[in-house]
Amino acid sequence: MANMIKEQEREELHKAIWNIANDLRGSVDGWDFKQYVLGIMFYRYISENITNYINADEHAAGNNEFDYAEISDAEAEEARADMVKTKGFFILPSQLFCNVRKGAKNNDNLNETLEKVFKAIEGSAQGTESEDDFKGLFDDIDVNSNKLGATVGKRNEKLVKLLDGIGDMKLGNYQDNTIDAFGDAYEFLMGMYASNAGKSGGEYYTPQEVSELLTRLTIVGKTEVNKVYDPACGSGSLLLKFAKVLGKDKVRQGFFGQEINLTTYNLCRINMFLHDIDFDKFNIANEDTLISPQHWDDEPFEAIVSNPPYSIKWAGDSNPLLINDTRFAPAGILAPKSYADLAFIMHSLSWLATNGTAAIVCFPGIFYRGGAEQKIRKYLIDNNYIDCIIQLPSNLFFGTSISTCIMVLKKSKTTNDVLFIDASAEYVKVTNNNKLTDANIENILRIFTKRKKVDYVASVVDNSVIGTENDYNLSVSTYVAKEDTREKIDIDELNKQIDGIVAREEVLRAEIKKIIGEIKL
Image (cartoon, rainbow, N blue to C red; front, side):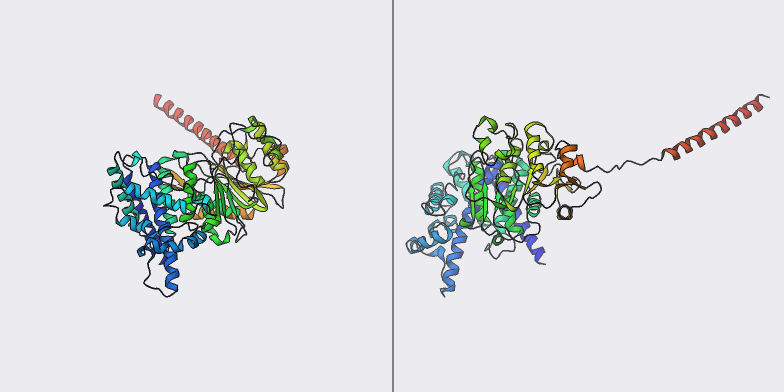
């Protein structure tokens, strides 16, 4: 019953989001427009978050009629210092989502009002511990953009629709809701736009099912981890899977990630808040991870998950400092300038805790190409860092039909071998894409955990065999034979049948000859 209610709530929420998106995007590119929808959703979330928090405190003290949204700004100022310390930000009652929405239709300067509110929220964290988490957070919600309309009046019309659409979403008190309402709304929007836009806007969105598989691969046998890290974290969906699978309190020291794209970096921080991760429990940075990693003081990490961009260019050996970088130096060679894939692998391995596991989505070319990539594979195999390679089905990701793989890395293995799993048949077809079901994920995890040979599906191969017999080739197809589904033919039996046919033919010919002779007579 509870499950049915949950699904109904989710269905209602998705319908509401779809209607807002349809109603509002018009000439605005959907991928750009999601920033407005998500940004205003975030504005509503933090408004309700702080209101609920202050109200609960007052009600517990016996002041049952109190409502933060209805008191004056002057009265509210008394709570500012305490709120910034506890929540990381502060919003005056007049700046709350519900109050700005109330007067929105009659506010000719709505765009200016919203701009001031966003600046005030960001400004409330300035000079405090939470400054980095709020700085520039609303930069992509440009309320004066021509994308919203050619004139101020038209822009404000769209903004009113946005406030009303998001205000009407049945999100309730997010803590009482049976679904993770704000977080779920975010994931639905990201998935909806990603399926339409592919990698548009620099997004490499990882479908939820793939995120779940990666997360669960890294926590086999564990009920908690110290901290999780994604070196190319995008909008943070992979990191946040740990909050859903383990529970956010079971990620003891928090969520860490780095993202090169500024817009996506802002969305990632918003996503953390929408999933109720406190400002002091996440640290997301905006830089190029390979050239300028920002978490030297936080590594090592017990769980690392990532879906880094495939086959992108990087500085490689044109930057003389990189070969001496402690992350890349151990392999004695850098990943090629045209393919940074193995640079992400080396970076992740370097920052992996001794008792940790990394699960990284990889482009298949890195497993068989020669040159520098072969030498890096040799380093990984000779030092026994590769635990498992999983071949995934094709067409799992938005915007690409490539059959990707997962590389699982560990630093404290008890055996000198690699498990190869061919999971290319583990999917169901959904419209144009393939999708992993819960049963598919369970099946892959069962094979991964048992670590035994399964005909046509899994093979455990000694490191020496990978090196000496296969030149460090790590393609799953090299070690897991495909089942021959062609009809098997018994040649001896076939020959017997042919002999029988030939003999019968001879008899028939003789009989026909005899009949023709008799006719002639």
